[in-house]
Length: 191
View (tube, rainbow, N blue to C red):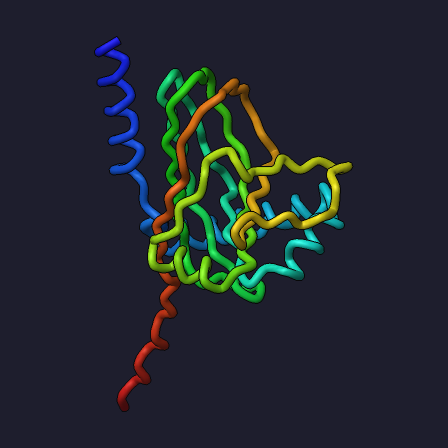
């Protein structure tokens, strides 16, 4: 049992330390933005009514094209995403999740977090937003109901899962945020 405890603590440490909100290079950031946009378009294709309902009511949307998750008693998940406001990318978001309980397996999925409450958006940008890991996530299919059910100003949608995971856990999600910086235009050439 002591070995499992140490293994779980090491996994949670590695997930927390190895997580960053944004890729290092400009080309990787552009690819992340492209992947996030593609994930939103996939959600729209899967269920246009859900997509339209949530995007109309949200002040911001955090899109994680891939969240990887795994566990055996202790679990963790990690993903990099893009924060959109008014349809424009404004920053990068890293998501980490730690869980404990009956769980086994691994999976990858897409996650979209719709933020309706401006105070919750401010919390995310201050890296002060924490959410229950499983409590509010809704898996979307083509026939899912088209009603936006926000919990404390935030709605979480997952889709496109690959792999298998069985769990009955407790835990939470935490976020890191890096604003998107605009590069200054090059200085004019001097004659």
